[in-house]
View 1 (cartoon, rainbow, N blue to C red):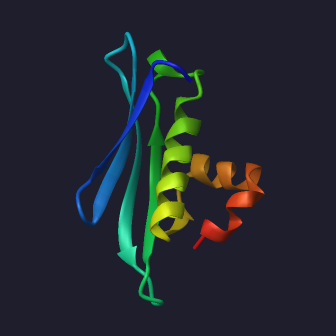
View 2 (spheres, rainbow, N blue to C red):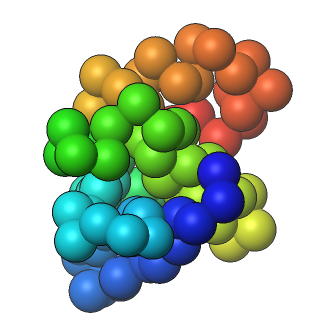
Length: 101
């Protein structure tokens, strides 16, 4: 989606992805918690996705999840989709199965 910028704000044990849409002050968010896995890797628990109605219906939530997936794939992290939106996205994208913790 043009005019949307996704940024990652990592604060160690917690973090979030933020979506800014051109022309709007509203910000979409996907929050996560970071945990060390028993295998020594990192697990990201995607716990909330929130897109204000002002910027809803534009694919913002999907873009947030795609950023999470891309970063997890690059870093070798696994994801626990605690958020119902992220869970539904995993069901829609079986090609992400290897990233699921």
